[in-house]
Image 1: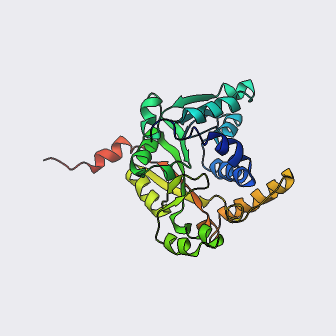
Image 2: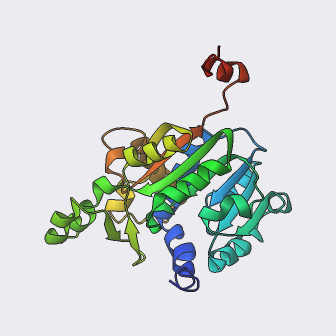
Image 3: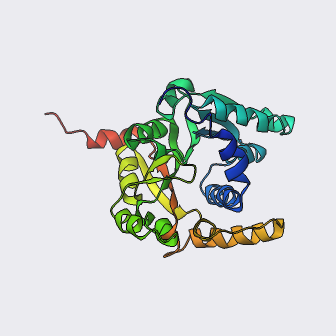
Length: 273
């Protein structure tokens, strides 16, 4: 697709989707899950495909140094608008970079980050391999790689709940669906992405659901206390089986392997006599 494919969707995505209960739950649940894995601030974080900064700006408020990278000028413009409303000390911790996720290393000057986030991007790329390789290459040794992807194991649920029975039957073996914004999306499994991460020197350490009840049902909650109550239930469900398995998206966290000490590497070398 030529131009910026997100130009016509940025307003709906940023001002619409994230303002819903489901959008607020996504941000809260992912944030709480991340805080169990991230290094302490002021570590440097890279948010690949970070859009308008809904996930990374709260991390900047917490003291992290954030680089938000996105290929879409429209989404970066939204990020600039939202960043302008932050306190000066938060703005000073955020850098915006326009580039694709696959080109992240070059676009960030080869910097290695304490954590690399990529949430809701893999579903829009045809081949996940180059993007996963790029994410792992940008993480420092022992750094976190955090990805959120569409769950291939739950694609039949939405059409079934909408009584589209033929679509639901076909979805059991499908790997694609049209997302809520009308954009074609591609699904992965936890096991497949774990294998890709291991192939790129990152060891998976946890996976979670993200939303369940607010995705499959229409939850309208204008009271902040009620939204917090919904989010607390979703966070608990995201950590438990079978609930996390039913989430339409999943959150997978891995950690890059530190280099082996030289003496250990030398011990692996065959002797030459």
